[in-house]
Length: 73
Image: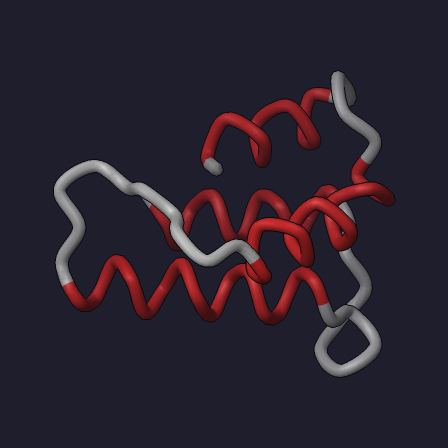
């Protein structure tokens, strides 16, 4: 996920496609993360929900990606 955010920030990936990607990941039955704890899982869930629903939160921009990357660091 951090790699995707970095790639959106650098322009390698189109930030406009991030909500669709997050929606697909959010709907997956199983997501594997390295050494998860409950806080990591909650933050990941929040990220996927907010980014996949920009109409409810905020438009997904490079600034949004940077904020989430800083939050997830």
